[in-house]
Image (cartoon, rainbow over all chains, first blue to last red; front, side, top):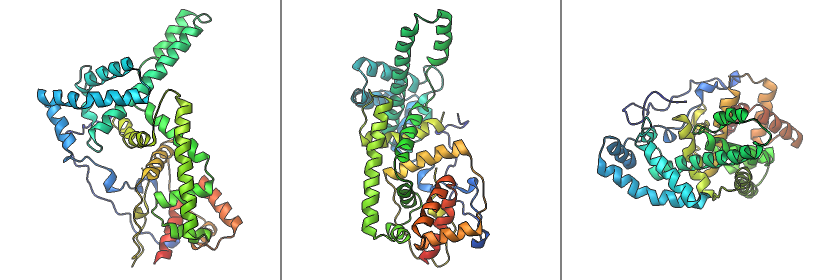
Length: 267
Length: 94
């Protein structure tokens, strides 16, 4: 979905935390969805982000800023792409497309979507990794299609390729990451998953979890750490299963998981 | 994005301020919660007094193993119930 406003136009995203109305405990009423709040620290555009100021210069037509952008990130992005499974040629092609889109060669400049929430380097690598995955999948489909040609009519092939070969929206990566996480969570006993959810989302302390299960805090700590390790391992294995050519380390995954939802939310 | 315990009503006189855990696991949950919200949609729901009582027992560590297992299964089916459980935990912090 595409937002009407651009992140570089001034609009207030720091509207402050809404306080839910007081509820009487005995009402036993769950909060409706529109009262699920995003912590202030996780939302909004940081207009003070040096990267955002830099990108604004680029978009304002500052040629030296545009040159600096490419000079600063091209080598780094290419190295990351190659490390993640792209050939040298694929990396160069993807980067050429990326820079062309960044500067708006085929419409609205991609850089308008940068909101400054994360470092520019993380955002760029997330965008280009998404494109790499999409490209590799389309390539695999193209190969599969050519194998099928002997049994399918050319007209059908064209129909299918017209549908499948267009570049997919920016949610390829998000879908991949989410599915890997969901599969990893599904492999964890529901009891442990609840403990993790309480600790990581709701800021329940390990001592309180221990009280609920009648466990010592140290047992909770060991159990949760073991579950975290299993989840991390399972996620990387799941990513490898889905796209065997894709090489990601845990830190890579975290960086992508942090930035990828923004690609979707910004269309 | 997920809610946090801070979104729940503050208990009067609360002094306990747990440290926020903002790490990679928090990130994983935020991605999946977002996904679940999109797919399922969510609506306010009423909790029966029996379930509320059981949640209070769970928070206080007074559930039998069987009750705990049953509640955990229920929490998986109705993820919004976790708000009520967290509220009970916070009440015990007072």
